[in-house]
Every structure is written in C-alpha cells, then in structure tokens.
Image (cartoon, rainbow, N blue to C red):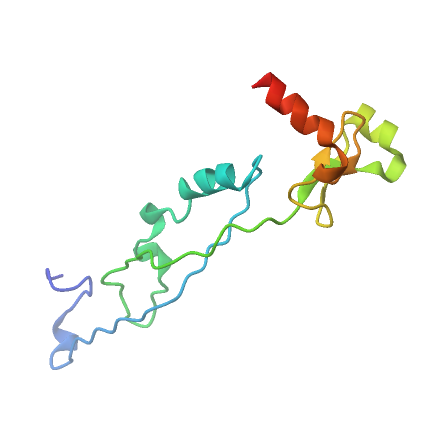
Length: 139
C-alpha cells in the first residue's frame, strides 16, 4: 500500500493506471422536534443536524477494486422551520377519557397559535382572551 491510495497493488497490476473521481451528492436531512414555539424549535434543531463523525469511508460502496480515498460533507443551506402539527388530546373515545388516560395525538388541522384550554379543548387564541390576561399577571 502507498500513501497515495488505499489500493493494494502488486506485480499483476504493473502497467495499470490509478484513477480517482470525485462525486458530489446532495444530502437532505429533515428533522422533527416538539417545542413550545418556533424559537425553541429553532434552538433545538440548531443543536442537531448531521453527525459528521459518520461521514467516513463506510458511507461509500467499495467493490470491483474500487477503494474510497476521501469523504466529506459541508453545510450549504437550510429552510425555515415550519409548523407541522399540535399535540392535542385524542378524543376518539371522548375528551374526558382522553384526559383521564393521557391519550394524545398530532393534529395537523390545529393552528400553531391555538391553545389547549384547562378542560382539554383546542381553541383559537382569540377565543380565549382571558388566558392572555392570566399570562400577563403571572409574569
């Protein structure tokens, strides 16, 4: 073996040429997280992403005399964090049973700013103006 490549060469390879090709791939990582708001989600997601320690020679397929010389990954861009769904009580067997049993589900129809009332209902924030007053008084 030489310092130039991981290829093992012997006298049967006499006269052959060593070739190298770089191939660029686009990798997309889409991650989900549960958070109270988008700011908290952004913070959590910024601490995650690609595990660069896993970008190594094991990532590449090697066969027919092809050996991996190098692997690399670089950050280029990311989209805005998007709201997907809200955790709400699963009222399939009735809201009271869901609250008692702690049955929850992800509701893609609930809006990001909807709130869960004390009795477990999902309501538009505008429908519950006293909650804003409670928050203001508790701060």
